Image (cartoon, rainbow, N blue to C red; front, top):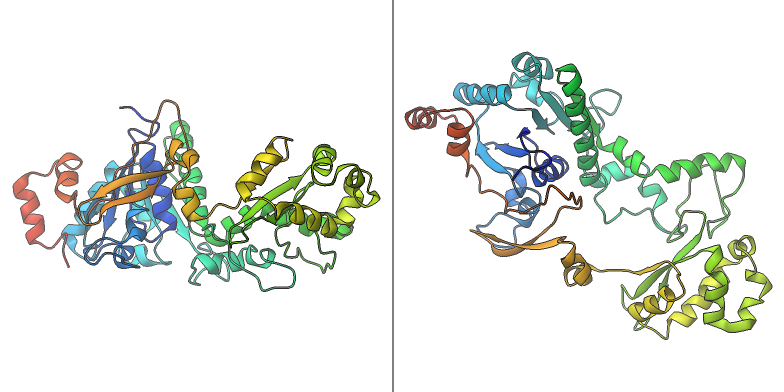
Length: 412
């Protein structure tokens, strides 16, 4: 079936999370993603192993819909194959440390000579230029240095990382956008180009509303923040909504770690909400008569909402508030989501079968295209498609493949 990215071939040298996130999304949309692994394999195959002898969930959940080949790029015959793959691919992706590909003889300048139309897409912690360029980066390091941690958590507590992997997976999504933009430009120019995403840069971009608030501080306090103790930087805001409307997580019964409903109190729903919670008395309370005074007294407002919520579960309270058009949503645990009918309907948690693992679940594709439906397929075994790619893509015959194997092109 023709899909959105059918005809695009990607040579994916990325490993761990950021790059594989990007290439997996493009594989979902129909790109032929050839995952090039060293003879040792992507390190995540053996990280956080839960079933002895099987590829870890860390690997399987980031590498669906790809083909895997092994190449020894320190071997001359391995380099020969890699060069031929560059010649016939649209994109080569990498997230090695600075200088690694250069030392192997495949700098961007050399790759561009081999195939002037190719797009080389790189993920670095801090980019290839600047004082931090040589620093190592991981998810939480990127969150720390990109401004996310300093603005996450409660005002009187330590900075915290987000559960969403905005440093790794967030950068992967940015890289995909850059790759697709380069492909579109190539249609006009006929030339490839170098695309780079730095994890620190991408975290900064995802924290853009905090940069909005950073500049607003020059003109006075931020009225929507529950704490009004400001310095010269954007503070931690706990569960404040961070927007023009007031919002917070309200604890419900029976009081477990995720028995909360996030509620947004818009100006035009206040009367209905106040009437449902406290009747005429709350409707006429001067502390809450409009959004300006509610901001000043939001602590008391949240206390009244929490007292009311203590009579209901988060699902019951969601139903009550939806009846009066109050935006809200329950805090969903991973267990909640794994069993949620809406998630199943959206095909965001799909069951797969793996020759080593047996049955397991993978996240689906969050992008829904009417003419490019996604069938999620299991991750490949290490080198599973080596012979297939060599014969189908590079037209090597059986005897040639055996010669390459004997020469150590695919092994240590």
